[in-house]
Image 1 (cartoon, one colour):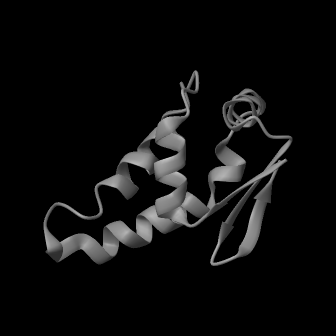
Image 2: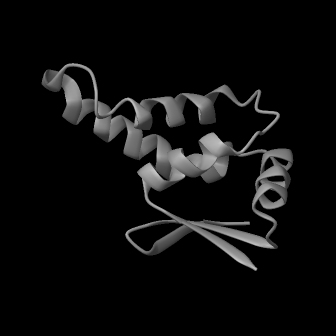
Length: 92
């Protein structure tokens, strides 16, 4: 079975459900940034959105092998694909 996560909002939602032994503060920061996009001052929302998207696009390089194993175990799947608008940029 394959788990597909498409988009930064889906990534933040799905990953907030995964109980990773995350000491991976960069992943946690990306999740929190995406989750906070709907709140806060509108004056810097575009900059926060760009930052969230850039962080999301870098998740594959930031996930450790342990993180990847725990994600697969959580979703009970053999592989995970992370994509943006259907274009897969990370697969493990």
